[in-house]
Length: 361
Image 1: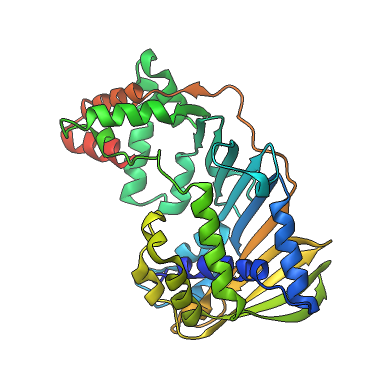
Image 2: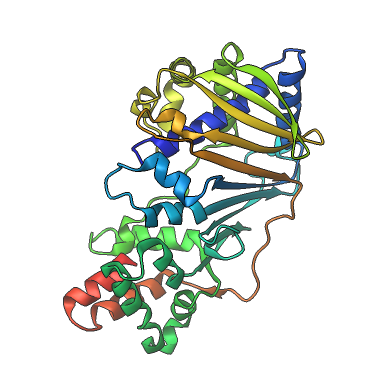
């Protein structure tokens, strides 16, 4: 997809949602949306599902002309679905630094979200992972060179020694568990000689603390108070819909000014990304059902002057969902197991085959 389009779309949706939290006007549309977002803070669990609400043909029509963008790629995008879940023992608004919460991420490619390619759960300082590596053929194409290399690599699973049982389970699509602290310690120890693949692992021990997160949210609210406009769209599909519009470029400039030095603490944040925001007003459709936020829809084609049709991106919201829990039967994967896999891969077949199979995975 065109550079920055997806990122800009997500930023716009977050911005529109935050506008509701920062506008205290008494008129019906903005109050309705404001209350719906505020209720999320009182929940202990939340699930967000992100998908394109468009057929493969609609996606292809909107993005055709992009380099290497084919109808097969459009079909893949039409089936992709990302789900993110958060849960805690107390309401989100009451969480403080040090309080534990759980997280889950799921990527599916069958359109329904029932069959996942990637499942990640973080519960009680442990990360659980399940991969359908064979299923990734749907993304890369079963006839491609990468697919052939993937199948060759997966074929090694039955040849792995008993000491690498956890790796074999991972390759076969079973749940495995990882202790991040042990991986961080191992990566740091191995990075001293500069030769370990694990030495390049990022330090995941740092992140935004609760105070900094609140400052970021406050900055969003401040930037949006004087910019967002709300309009009733009526009730359909059992939900009240409100259109939230914001002048994207003006909002980005005010947001950058409000964040100030905090931008250095936000992972992967680049001030230059804000400069790419189009100088136009963008609209987001917010659905409220039973007083709760039910979904957000954004036509990301608004950010692309070359798009030839609409490209609606939808975020389905389910608050009060079941809490994230650890899967049963997960085998422990130690950092030494990955080193064993690398060594086995390099020693399997010729050098080029081992390099492609081992490191690409």
